[in-house]
Length: 184
Length: 184
Image (cartoon, rainbow over all chains, first blue to last red; front, side, top):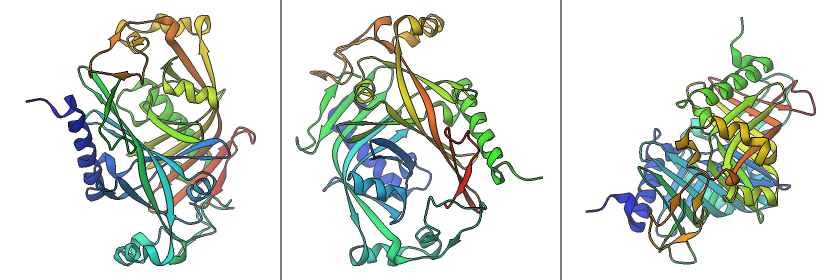
């Protein structure tokens, strides 16, 4: 009986288990990946909240304000890198995704399911990143027109398990996720 | 008496305190930022270890293997974004840095100070990312010629404190780090 990190399937399964856990559990490391994007040739990185993870289509969902810097970056280059460090599992998850920005009627169902406090994250005035004369000189009011879902279609997965020995594997959509060991 | 997150100076001070703590304390969130880079127009992100933080010059240091994908990215675009989420402080630290790759005699002092176990991270064969037929079909041997220091000169700082109210501020090298409140 091998450990989960000793086989390609074991690593791949564990990754999806952790991402699903992140969607469901506010305390899970996979709840809050770092999302990196590119704007004007510069990398940008920020914490996001993982809202959905679907293994069948290998897609993830993240919510954001249509006027956030994430959106500006993704309109520049519709590509995102997601990063999670699962400390207890000693597992680093790195994903590269093609990102589609969904708005309006296609995301109405997510909005309808969201509590009022959650909706406050979409619609700050002035828009995110605008200079303020005072730290609190902004207003929050839910605005469905500002609500966007980032649909992240995973293209490549790079997993590293830091155990007594280190193991690293890559999985690609193009290869049907069969997996390949890599030098760590 | 204001809280640290209520003033621009307070936020800036706290950031440097956390980064310094990260250098010294293996358990600190700032010990292991996420480093995002760009390669062929794609963002990449991975965990790194913060090795030095100098407020006077606003520079950070990270160590890596000269044959890692980080180096390939940084030769493509010598720009990095560093990201830390300081959970207990409810502080997100986002940094954009111009990155210089240092090797050879200029980094001999860091190598000399490193324990043997640390040196094993520089010199895996085959090189990091190379395909393997078996997960453990690699060898580690310290190789000073493979040791690189990434000198990260911070250009912009973006801090977000998630408190009862959210506060966000930007600081730039060009402005002498005086700071500017932003809409969160």
